[in-house]
Amino acid sequence: MLSIVGTNRDEAHLRNPAIRGYNVVYRPDKVNHCPGCGRSHWYVGRLMAECGFCATALPLAAASLRGSGHSRSFRPVWDVGHAA
Image 1 (tube, rainbow, N blue to C red):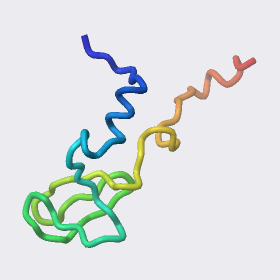
Image 2 (tube, one colour; image 1 turned 120 degrees about the horizontal axis):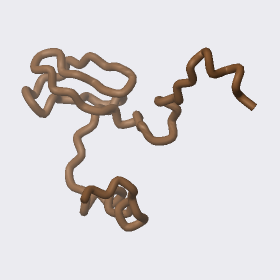
Image 3 (cartoon, rainbow, N blue to C red; image 1 turned 90 degrees about the horizontal axis):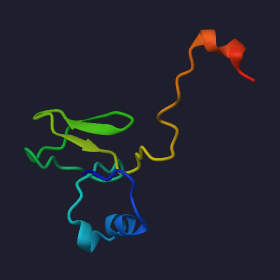
Image 4 (cartoon, rainbow, N blue to C red; image 1 turned 180 degrees about the horizontal axis):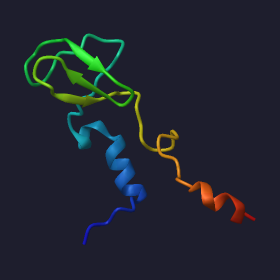
């Protein structure tokens, strides 16, 4: 069974680069060469950067989906009157 809830041991594993391994990310303050084709032309979005030649996508180094407000809960308009 797949466990989605992380433990402190799992989080420590992710923070240690010697155990985690090589992590390819796009860094806006550096020259970034594509791991797929070696070129350096990028289309940069809010969360990902995509190579302009081979379409390899890399996450931005500063982007995080945890605790940064990227996902918001949806509340239907008709449910506003029932809020207590």
